[in-house]
Amino acid sequence: MFSNRTNETPKTWLIFAVILIAGIALRLHNLDRYSIFFDERSTMVISQGVVLEGANQKEVFSKLTVSNSGFWKTPEFSLRPPRVLRSFTYNEHYAPRAFTPAEFWAPKTLEDYYEANNRSDIGNSPFYYLLLHFWMEVFGISDFSARSLSVFFSVLIIGLTYLFGRRFFSVNTGLIASAIVAIEPFFIGYSQQARSYSLMFFLTLLATYFFLQIIENEAKKRHSTKLYVGYVVTAGLSILSHFLSIAVLLGHALYALLFLRTIKGWIKMAVSAVLALSGVAWWMIYGGGTYTLYTLSYQADLYKRMADTRPYDNPFGVILPATIGNVFTKALPLFSDLVIFTNGMTDALAGKKNVFVAISIGVILIIWYRFRNHIKMNDKLKAAVPFILTISGAAFYSNHKLQFIILSISIFALSFIPDVHMQADKQQRRRLLMVYIMALFPTFFLIIMSFKNGHTYGLMQRYSGFSFPYVIIFLSLLLQYYNTIKLEFRALIFIGLACQLYFVSLRLGEFYADRSPKYGYFSTPREPNPYYEAAQKIKELYQKGDTILYPASRYQILSEMDRTFLPYSVQDAQVTNLYLPKDAQYVQVMDTTQTTHILLKKAGKPEPVVIKKLKGLRYGLE
Image (cartoon, rainbow, N blue to C red; front, side, top):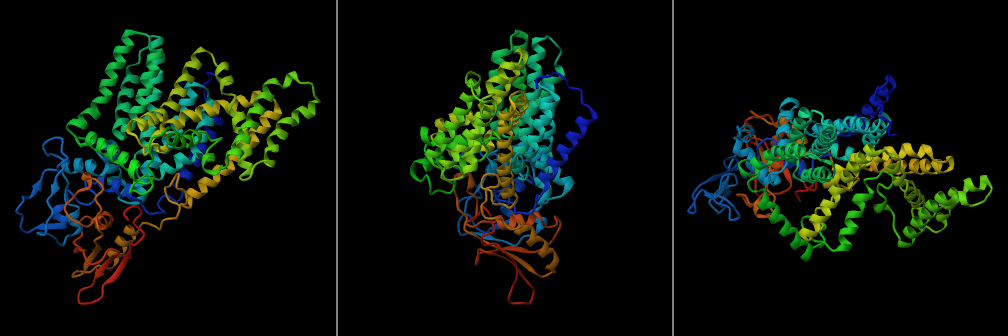
């Protein structure tokens, strides 16, 4: 498993091709079956330079008749003179106006893109939105095209995991690791979201791929100019894809402290770090991230206030105070779900007695394996002991008997981690240390930030998802090591893993059915995108002289960043217009008399045609 053989055979490429095809198929399945949700709507409009709720489209949705207080108002929360964020002073003199798709799609300035990113995603992920903008210029604006960019990078993660495993361990390690990545529900789930996660996971893994080679080349005094360039570019773009990528770079710094031994190497890495951070520094000072630090501080205070006063009843979900108990409970699934052996167990298993028995049996299995040779017993009976021990727990479990049995086997299977480490040579142990750091540090970073901020809101798997490839690479080494242990123990582990894969497949099935709060955020399946359906029906039915009416739902302001210029939401109109022709002259207005329907008022007819009823279909707006 630690073989340095990196020469692929035709069989290797055939296996890898099958893995890629399977990974692509799993990621494309049902890709645009379910409607985009709130975060994806934000993604779609930001990529087009539009602020969700129209703060930079005031002239589209309203007209100023008289204003005694001035046209523009400096936001009270500004840290600097107003340049990007502008707020409309609302009073009774601002009235809705008719608008067309052509006006909605009027050319946007660079300032529009900055403001869209600032208001709708705190200035985060600008590189992703830039890529998505041009991606949809090529492939068109649709749910499928927006999400397919995430599919593209998720498939690249499969390939890069193979290259990482092959380069630093062996071809078999690369193949096994890439196969696990291909079927891992976490990667599949986030490949089907029009968000930046797949991009940042890919870039951080690629940055680590370059970084580890740089450290090893410096030790051998090899030339690494191309690797440094690759590292600067990928590390810099990873932070511009998501600010939390900084946790990965901090992990790199920790590894460099341990193994970078030359002054020249430190100088080059220091220069590389400055160059990698220069892009985000420019973005925060001059670009669209000028309000990011303030917004992050504002959000931290807001979430802390919610945790202290309304932990279960607030607009953002359950937010608990950052006590040791609360943080442990929230963080445990982040660690357990990283490992395919224990994926989903913290959600399914219940009962302290059951957990105690399962863990105890796992520990007994470990002791039996380590000391079995000191016990005289019939060979056949000795071989049966692991199975008897494992199955005996079923007599005590009050629920999920098979999954508790799998938990015992998983504890035993993971006990071989020290054996894998001890079997490695000096260079491989250094590489394994890199794997350990990258597997654990991002989650520990979230835990530290949770205590610092005083709440548990940020303890989410997607924010530490950088860790998955490294955990998977180590699991592939473990799986190979099992071939060196006795048959009965090997059979026990692989039978347990096969059963666990069955439960993982059930979770994947739940995701495809849109009943997976963990990977898809929803327990009740969404309908197909109602805005896309409305746009298609409008294109079919609209005739000159008709008017499209959009519901004007009450707009709830959750923070100063949300403050805009009208007391009602224009989001339904904005998202529908994304799917309408950019040069269309359809007359559209906001209908302040109702909040649930997109209507088409036909010329000369008193009753409007119902285009779409949106009540309950907004997925995050209600």
